Amino acid sequence: MSGKRDNRLNWLLSSSTLSQLGDGIGKVAFPLLAATLTRDPLLIAGLAATQFLPWLLFGVLAGTVLDRVDRKKAMIIANVTRALVVGLTAGFVYVDAISIWTVYAAALLIGAAETVADTASNVLIPAVVPRKKLEGANSKLQSVEIVGQTFAGGPVGSLTFALFAAFPFLLNSIAYGIAAVLLLGLLGSYHPQRAAGADQHDGSGQDGPRARLRSELGNGMRWLLGSPLMLRLVLIATALNLLAELAQAQLVLYALEDLELSEAAFGMFAFIGGLGGLGGAAIAPRMIRRFRRVPVLVGGVAAAGTGFAAMGLTSDPVVGAMLFGLFAAAVVTVNVILATLRALLVPDGVLGRIIGVWRTLVWGSIPAGAMIGGVLTKLLDSPSMTFVVSGCSQLLLAAAVVLMLRRFRPEVDAAGTDPSADRA
Image (cartoon, rainbow, N blue to C red):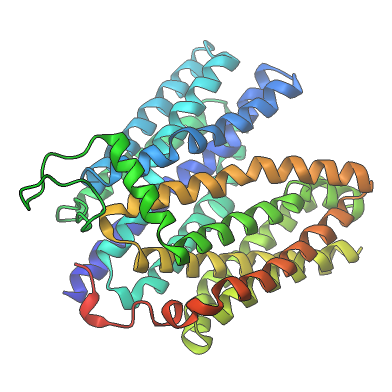
């Protein structure tokens, strides 16, 4: 059975690698395309908002749908949809029939499909590996995202756009198409296991007709509100993302103005952050086995805060880059723990909904944190000081995490230790 699980994980990770590569290409190619169509800063900023908007509009809905259907099939449909939309965009660009509003529409459709594809990949992880291997599987999924979006997608998107504008969109479409095909190797059915009491039943003692979508969404929300531990974990993830984004949104100004780096050197600065993230994904499972989850979670939040606070206090580019790598490693480690706990503690029948709520809150905090960070930099007249504020705030969050999880530590550290609870 373990060989089968390992094989299914490989198919899922292979598909996710191509999907993340497509995401990385698109996140660079779409803004570059927009900049050739308009220099209006509001329209350029609006495209960035449009790329995040689907998570706010459809994130919870996508999770609810994934608790009703075969998750693998939904992921295939989402990838095929993205391949078609990006392929059409490539065609419009090639025949010079593109407009900024077409770019907006494409970004919105791709983002809507992304809410299904990315949520499904997270929901499928506990279905293809035993519980005791979830930390390792989530680390691999984090690595795939970092490699696809940071190391491969971004450079491929910018270089191919420089050759001719339709090229990155064509590659993007091919990547999504291959991602869909690879999922055919993921054998088996992946319908959710209906959680007892999570959804409506008729009075006969047997499952009645499926509850309406709105009712199922409400039931998922009630499950979350009735789980003090999971609610705390969602709040921790949202708070960390919000506080980190205060500074991350100012990273380019910090590097170019305070560290006086060139634009080319800034690319290397961001690259080192990606290396740190890969390092965090590699060491997270070993750290957790040695020190247990709660201490590593608290330490990860504290290390992230220390990295940003120290970045604000240094003017040495090398030291700043190393500290940025520390931040990235710490955040990825925290993400591995949170994703694993989510998979272990949430019943399969409501997992899609909980991930939908989770991602809506976490991704929704990005524009909020960015706006607050911009105001801070304006008031303090220094990107470096915004990093100090962000880092110190994360250190306070680490202290709050200790208090929030104090009575749940035995449950958190023991989650997944019962081999009889493995899911097929």
